[in-house]
Length: 308
Image (cartoon, rainbow, N blue to C red; front, side, top):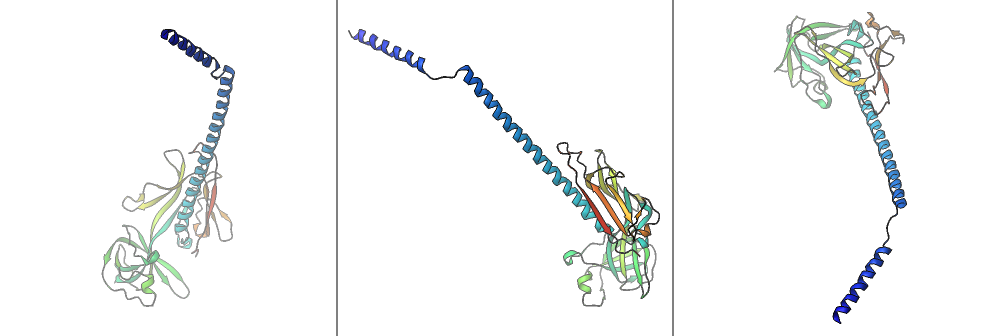
């Protein structure tokens, strides 16, 4: 009797299990196909949105990169160009070209405190924030001594050999002398030539440099700077300042020159004394970044202060 009861209950449980199996919910093939289709559509939309966002971010990065390079050129060029004196041949004859400009770059300004005809004692101008600045002179640099009167003004060139720290007292008069000149830290400039010693003479020290648009090893164009090396008697290897830019010499990136009346001067003109304004037309080059083809531009206009 007990065995019969166990068998009966076992049969009942199997019947319930079979019934539950037949009534359990599931997916048909059509439902599964629709689910996969909708999932594919959603993934496609997400992928398209992500790709579009990536391109937009890359384009914005390209734009910011181009703006940064243009701003770098716009900051550097006026520093060396604005204080040029074309009338004193600060721009080399024939070297004002559409792809380059060679000039005398002012590396220091000072005043004569004493010394001798072959070794001037100088006090340099104080830098920004009244900071002392080192007098970095190399053999072959040129010191220009201002000779001024009520009617005329001229700069006398003298070749420099070296500069070194020195001790002494700079007897400049005037209440503002100590706030303009670094009279507490004097320098001796050794000359290759001799000049009459005149205290309180203003001195400008220059070195030839050349700004050029050049094609680098990566096949892109950059704005670079070459400084003069007196030992080798040639310009040093060009150093990049900013870029890349559109190719030089085309209708894009270039230097342009104008006289006092606003007339454009030809590239390579021998009459560089007539230059009153220099313009650098800069176009960014989108080719280094293939995601974006955007291009921006800037025109740096520098009016020369000392045109006599």
